Structure formats: C-alpha cells, structure tokens
Length: 146
Image 1 (tube, helix red, strand yellow):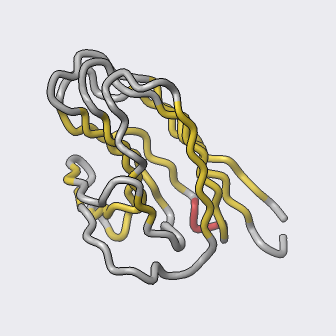
Image 2: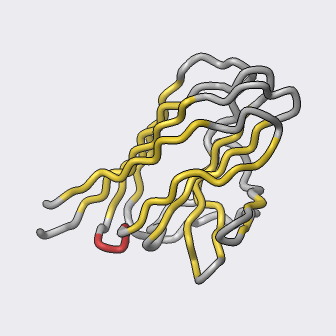
C-alpha cells in the first residue's frame, strides 16, 4: 500500500483576521487519509483552524474545523481518519474563493469522505490577537492495492 504525507506548515494571523494558509494538492491519487494536527493558541485571542477542500475552480468548502483554541492555549494534537464515503449528517459549511474564505463549519466537526484533489488551511484569529502561532497539519494519504 503506497502512501504519501502532505504537510501544511503556517503561522496563524498576528491580528484579528481571516487568513488562507498553505494549499496541498495531489490528493486525488489517494483513497484514505489520516490527518494529524499540531496546534497552538495565538497570543491574546481565540483561534479557529479549518481545512477547506476545493470543489471547483475558485470554489472552496469547509471540510474540517478543529476545536477552537483559547488565547495562548498550550500545544494540542489532534488526529482524525477518513475513508471514502459521504457524511451521513447534513451540516452548514462555509465557502470561499482562491483569494478569500468565509468558513462556517461548527467547531470540532469533520465532514469526512474524500476531499478531492486540493485542501487548504484557513485561520480565523479573534479579537485582541497580537501574535500568531506555529501550526503544522500533516495529511497522510494511502493508495489501496498498490
């Protein structure tokens, strides 16, 4: 079974704002995924970390929203895995373009299923944020039967 790890390595915004982070591409070649995230809270304000999947040219939709990090939260690690399929619960999601994002997925929610070919990180830093934090998200994909 062949595998590859895609890495998103960003620093979250240093002021209250929404920012688009790294994009990883080439996920269509894989069947299942394990997502491991190392997250740290920003200084002074809450931080929301999302993954959005590209569903069409210039159209991105929420795929995963980690638990909201409080101001200055200590390092935390999350893992989630998925296999091809469709989420069995209807949930509200945010959307975006190649240059803007308006995430809306509830905290601690994962849509599941295959993300398509591209995934990007989106960061929403809350009021009073004065310094960003280092974020690393690894998405490991596996090809079945290879």
